[in-house]
Structures are given as structure tokens and as C-alpha cells.
Image 1 (cartoon, rainbow, N blue to C red):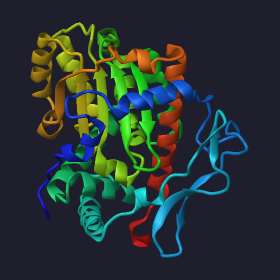
Image 2 (image 1 turned 180 degrees about the horizontal axis):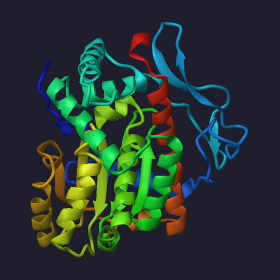
Image 3 (image 1 turned 135 degrees about the vertical axis):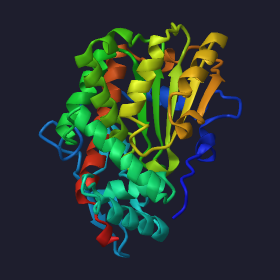
Image 4 (image 1 turned 45 degrees about the vertical axis):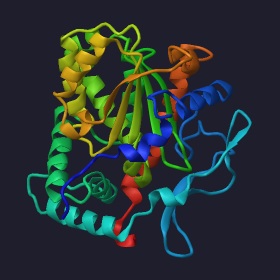
Length: 344
């Protein structure tokens, strides 16, 4: 099998105008100002979903391809129709299937390693470009995180964990968007929001690490999302540096993208020279494939990003993030249960 090569910068450059400035990302934020969803659970989850929100499910098309579709009416949010998820986001190539089957056979023949879902085997295959050694290493790391933080990997627990994270870090998460056509996922955060006090409390620190692991599942809801990788955007104006934060970055990284098979582009906006130095130090504590895709010195001519995302109120923005996380997490967790390599 091939060795892992996770540099997916080219896949994500269409979100950048070439100078590190926000282009489409700010447009998504402006859309969020116009569209302010009411709090709802994912379709098909429980009675909180409105009548015109149809159940999403895995279906077989006439040509035998499997994909996720939404049957019935299109979902509506504040009177605006949202199209169903493109089934092509869940298709895999023959090469990816071969990789996934080999990874599945290897992992399920290791007695000290828990079996994973077929969806996760494909996730590992795509993220690691078919590297068996890399996939097994990530499987061990994910198992270590699940055991350390007592993670059951259920939608309901994930939903509670994500909500708890927004309580521990109020106003930290400004926006999350999953595009149902392209599979792109973008998360916008405020790095100036303090996290030190949270992490000094062992219980809160464990809750946060559990939540960021679930956030990985939520932000990679489809195979195409895995291929493209996430875009993480940090607003850094006003960020107070501390060497203690280096350990925080390491702890969170261990529970999230150092364990979960994923590709990221991380962009830091409005950073000072000292912040750039600090981030350069912090990235050395992360795995090389993650640290190499950190981009510093990005700028927005319009100023601080919260003016675009935290509208009309910080509370409303947080609820939008949670609503979108819940929907993405529901898609991922349902796919974990229903996707089968044998059906492909």
C-alpha cells in the first residue's frame, strides 16, 4: 500500500483569494446573518424536528451506487429551502474500497484493537492515502482517546458533549458550515477567547477533550468531506499568549486531530509577530502532517471576524453552530451504523 501523504492544500485553496484573505468564508458568514435557523434537532431524530423536515437515509440508486439522500420535501429554514445532501459525497472509488478492505482486515485481526465501522475504515483509507501502518496507528490512538475520556460514540452523548463545550468556552465558536453540495466544512473560532481556566480544571479539561473528539466526527460527515479536509479559521486579534497554552494545544490535539484520521487547513487571522512565533513553537508539538498546514498572517480588510459571524447576538451565533454540528454529527453517526463495504 502507499505511504501516507496528507498534504491537501490544493484541495482547499479555492477558499482563499491567494493573499490569505477571507473570500468565500466571509460570504458564508454574511449568509448566516440573513439566515438564522431556529434550534432544531437533525431530521428524523425526535419530535423537535418540524413536519416538513424529512428523514435522511442511506439509499441505493438505480445504478447501484450508494449515497445519502433526503426523501420527501426539502428542509426549510426560516422559509428558505435547503437542498438534500448530494449522494455523490458518499461514493468511494475502487482504489479507496480496496484500501479500506485491507485496513479492515488488518485491524480486525489485532486482538488488542477494537473493531471499527466500515465508514471509519474508508475514512482511514482516504485520510492516509492507503497507508496500512498509518491507519493502524490512528486506530490505536482513537481507541486510547475513547478509553481515556470514556467516549461511547453515540449521537446523544456527542450532542451533550458539544453543547457542554460551548458552555465551557462561551463565544469561542463563531461559525460552522457544512455545504451539502460540495462536502466542504469550515469552522471559525475566536482564539482571543480564554481557555486556560477551563483546562486547569481536570474535569472540565476531560469534558472538553471528549467534545473535540466528537467535533471531529461532526465535521467530517461525508467521504468527500474527508477528502477535502476541514478549514479551521482562528481570529487572533487580542490573543494573550502564554506558555501554558502550548500544553493546552497539545492536549486538545491529542484528543482530536492527532488521533482522528483527518486533514486540516488551519488559518490564523490578524496575528502579531509574537503570536506567529508562539504558534510556530506550538505546531512543533503536533504531528507533522497537521502542523505543516498551519497558515499564519492571514488578514481580513473588513476587520475582526466576529462582526460577521456573531450576529445578531453571540447567543444566536452559538445556537447556529450547535444546530449545524448536530445535523452533521447525526449524518456521520447514522453513516457509521449503516454504511457497509460489502454493499459497495
